[in-house]
Amino acid sequence: MSTGRVRVLVADDEEPLVSLLCTMLNDLGYETSPVYGGLEALSALANGRYDVVITDLVMPDVDGLTVLRRCKECPGPVEAIVLTGQDDVETAVACMKAGAYDFLTKPFRLDNVASVVGKAAAKVQADEENRHLRDTLYASQRTLMNALDAKDTYTCSHCVNVARLALSFCDHLGLSPEVRDAIRKAGELHDVGKIGIADHILNKPGRLTGPEYEEMKRHPVIGKRIVDPLGVFGVEGDLLYYHHERWDGRGYPDGLSGDTIPLVARVLAVVDVFDALTSDRPYRAALALDEALRLIEAGIGSQFDPAVGRAFLEFLEAEPELIAPPAALADEPGSYADEPMAVSAGPAAGSSLQD
Ligand SMILES: [Fe+2]
Image (tube, rainbow, N blue to C red; front, side, top):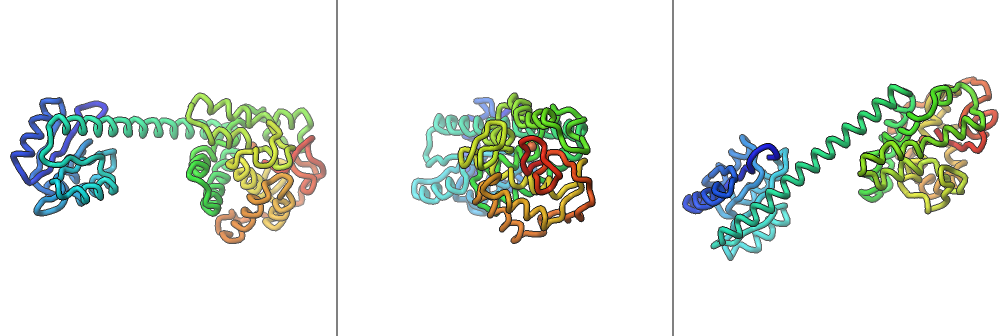
């Protein structure tokens, strides 16, 4: 539609009415296709692409409600306007509830028809533009993930695993669509800021020094800065920026505590740590599942939101098939980067259970 005229399908069993509407709409610059019944309308929808459909409600073969439902199954955005007699208004309202853009009662004024078709066409165009923007955003995310993969394959696959598990956890918790959407859109990007961290720190096979750990702690800030120009990150930005905050206020970058930390970050934090613990890292092999769960439990109320942490353990118990097969605990030397005291010979300065 953005490159051509608005295509309008006009379906009614009254041929003079179809002819009148098409003439009027053609004069206004629309590209019209007349059909004379519900069956013809269904056939046209199966074989062509339309932006706006005007359909009579009561037709002898197939009714307008069926045509409306078929419009909703079309792959691209299409808006349906229902024509109805005065005594069909209740049914027309039912059509609106089923997704019709508007309805017009017969007899109608042609300028009203023109106005409603114009608004429906504008909505289709806006929907198409939004879809294009979403596609562009998705492509931008893939580009960032490819860049992260080129820099650090572990971090890239870790981000994908965390996003997958966090989304299932989100569904288990029944969280708001806003939080779910943020995890779906930005979970894979949560560590994108590691693009800005030096390779010798990211891949160091031993414990980080204090200055190295301070450098690593910059990745949430860098990540937020990387995605900011995309301009559509609200809760998603919180996810990137706050996923290393701790319930007890000892996290970073801002040292927030308790429920001042955005919920999306509290949810991601526990999944993030679990995946890191159960993955091979440059400085240690993956922990056994029991050990990882024990460490998560130990972090409840200090590192993790108590309600979220307990729910996560219940979630893993209820859906064990979502856990990647745990690797055996390896005989690693006791020197690890960015790990808790319980796992390593000693944490880097200020470190927590984290990735
Ligand atoms: Fe991180």
